[in-house]
Length: 566
Image (cartoon, rainbow, N blue to C red; front, side, top):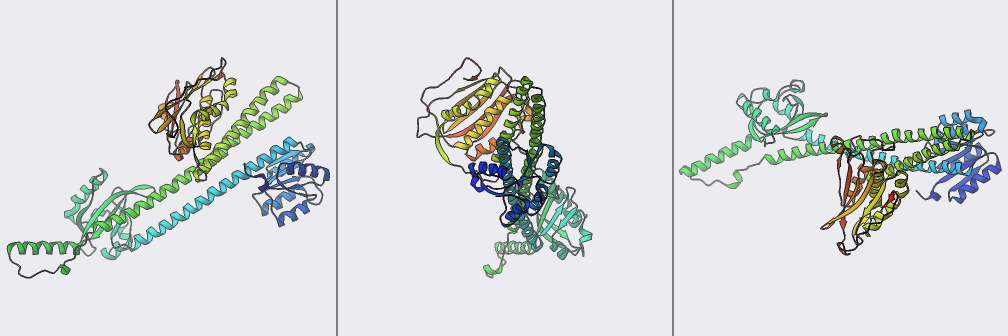
């Protein structure tokens, strides 16, 4: 969580005592707090210095909370607004939410309600900043791509080579200006023309064969003739390669005028033959013969075009990542908070009837939903930072057993509740060179994932294996497993694969993708083996550190008679 002294809050209430209570609580929580006893006073302060969070009474004289919220959000749309209202003013609270209020608290204000509302507001602020940074990076990438396109267009338009973009049938889709200038055709005449119509009849079989060779992966550099509109031939050397044009499969044909080169080559051959026969007495000076290899410029042209396609692929990956991010926020978070609202309503109704067993039942549901929401937000923020290279990586030497014990202890109670036996078998003296926070995140996600998809009464076992300079950590379960068709989707951001746990636990399908990316950032890798109905084995690799004994020690196995930690 970010430093709370950096978060500015302004509280507005026409009741001085209530305002004092709110300000006192927020000050003790180390927030930067200002107060105002009217909407006009608050607006004046905010015009001088905006705030991150506005807490306002909805019903106030002169300027009420709804009017104040409208004006504040017009000037500072990133401000998070929390309303305070009496129980009999529910309609005004609804109106307040419609104009952009994030949350509202009923009077008399309870400290727990206020604290929860503030924490949610802080999380929202943090998430907004993450998204703004992601959008900033995306704009930079778009600008880089646009610059690349403009540079490529300049190269394309000024090249002396003939460049044709063709569909897979050989029809012309696009070309550079030198084609019209040198061949004498107009743009309308060339568009849609088959490239074979521009080659001499003697070359047709050769061109067709080279296109076939290109599709089969063979080299396609060949000599032929392009025919001008006036019927005169130009001897060219042509390279054909596969590419994309407007999202469709296409061909790029780059032809270099080698008329002078071939003429010089034939002259050289004639001179050599004449010398061989003793027919030439004069000395041929070196400067009179100039040979140019056209393949170099053809290859340079091809490389420039392929680099543009590569940058388009990078932009596509960025957009896919952003779309997935918004999809998770829009769907999964909304679903979790809907269940929270419904469960809260049920708790209120049941509490009114004093049904304690039902209260416990719905309180348990609420706890699970809140846990899922927190886990989702943590994963989203970690993943978002990793996508933008914002994670600070610090390599330290750590005992892998201590890391595993620490993370297993976090799940002892959950394992007991689900009656799952959670065990580990790790030597005492195995050390790894890792980032501690990243490794803990990976272990937490894999153990939580195993608990989610293992039936009550099942088993989860964490083990390690050392191979040369690598330590392999495996989390095994005998849960529901994954079929082979969906196995390859687990680590791909462009694939949507989600399923509920054995106790109807929810998931986003994001955790495993994030774990693989994180372990790769610390020079490791991750993979999975599974058989549907028999469980999964998730394994990731870490760097072993040989400055410490890594092959000795006592293997420890701690056991309890009841489900939980073993």
